[in-house]
Length: 363
Image 1 (spheres, rainbow, N blue to C red):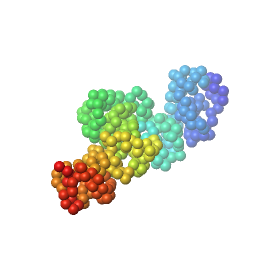
Image 2 (cartoon, rainbow, N blue to C red):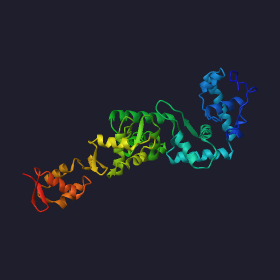
Image 3 (cartoon, rainbow, N blue to C red):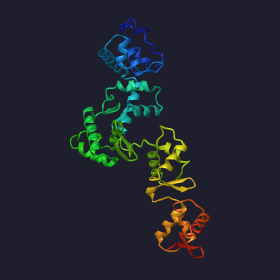
């Protein structure tokens, strides 16, 4: 098609064969159908074009393209009223939004609709249907929020006030906070003034809302800005640390990559990279022997068998049998009784045998 022409309906022919919405779009004016197809990516290649670029192809201003889009959406709304194929999508979307506190990010809502497996529409088609509704409001991406859908009694000015409060709170605090503690703080701040907004009483609203705020992250029961490593661990060291904390037990380094991917699925994890981080960061991770690692904060101190034996004997401040020493050493390092015996005998300048199979530190 030659795009260097005016948007003249008499000259336009729009291919609607690749979209499930053709039974509705065919009743729109050709220029309206064309703008919706290109703006929402309904064509066979799925490419979405901004209004400014569409207008440039037709030598029309962005404002004129916005007028055509508004007219197209109004016509689309009128055409789907009473059509169960479309109204069932909107009804299901409202149910999902209500179940999540009246707001969800665009991608999250559309993904949930697709996962219902109730409709034949693809992502682009579902977005157009949702954007066209009078009762579901579309929050376009702005300086503070990601693209989202919300329903009454929420409104954009209130959401903006809450975003500004969240941002200023963490800018002043400087560290992450327990998610539900922070929800209680925000409730206390806004419920008093907006008693009529029922969803402000619902914890699910805050969880969904926080997810839509740019620069805010929720992770492992905490919330903060994406600059805080507690809620946005970006390095492999921090990912290993939070995975091990979640597991709450020692783990073999070869098993760690799969566990890390459970929590951070968007990036590949190599065994060698994980092992290098474990070896390098002895301030966090302790080698327990046989490839097992634990966290230093769990009480493991690490070191060779000789060092652990010295610590055990100093702590107990008495002679100890080899059997008891093995039990204590095994709490920190996976070694055999023979290795413990060998160290006791090898370092006779440190350990002194006071009876058969009984040792103490040499005085």
